[in-house]
Length: 411
Image (cartoon, rainbow, N blue to C red; front, top):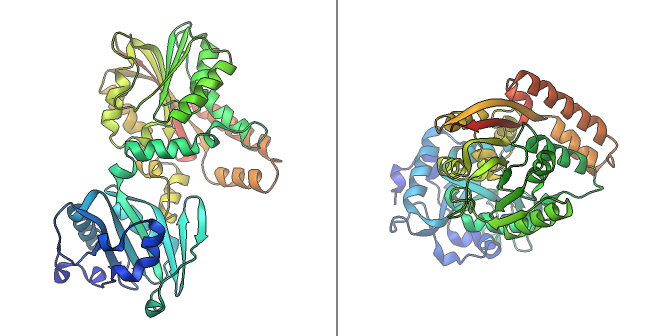
């Protein structure tokens, strides 16, 4: 482990694991498994590593570099870095720490400490803990990040658990103010470009299945195959496909880097659709290699995802300490296009959809506070903007939070 005197000044403070007993109780980890940044220990075996940032210090490059190096050397594959940033800090300063430790580490959990009170902060909201810091340490106040290695946080087990838990909500709810926009986006991606009529289609990372369903209905597919890491999502996609009268729906579970379609003895597909999936892949190249093998020579591919370069996404990365890993992990449409063209795909056309800030914020207010009164105007604005962008090609990246492109595999 790095010696204290070798660390940058901001990291030389020490906080003992016992001062964070409330965190370990809530986190479900034995405090005896933790050690501080200054304690020696075997490389690559730390279950919990604690680092303390002294008051008034920001995420300077030298500090970030030293912390990344120490965490990478010490942490076990499933270990956690507990980063205690003492004092009160604005959101953008906290976001700078998160951004600095990405892509090695990712956080989905923050604790806020104010004297004797502590609260847990996740993407789902803020919860006050019943147990806070001990009186002996009441002078300490600050923000505590819990980081894990990105490859662990986005690994197979974590992905299946998260997708299974969120599956019902990701299916959309008819009657809710958000539902028309939800279905419009799926229809836009699934039917973005012509797919072979009467062909075999694959929904690569299907979620609730709606992109593939829309395409299968529009182009008269003779078979719709679909897969997702989540068994719950596959069940929902299968039920949706059958309810919509899609011919020959076949669902399996699996990941994009080793897709379950086509299995041995099965042919690749006439058309493949993948919407909002590549940003979940820890290894984009492995994922794309898996995708390539599902498209037959001369076959069509439609792919879409969130837009890393949009104004809204850039603002969120700069100002929000907690973000879904996929928002940090996303690739630009340009990057994805280059990777596919290098693997024998010819670009046909592309476009953006989902207007960026302040449209998502306006939609949230419409759905939560206005009872859906602005649903149609907001949807029409998005439809018009997407149609205009589609007509002129891919320009306008900063205006949209999502992109979609179509390709043909050279044969």
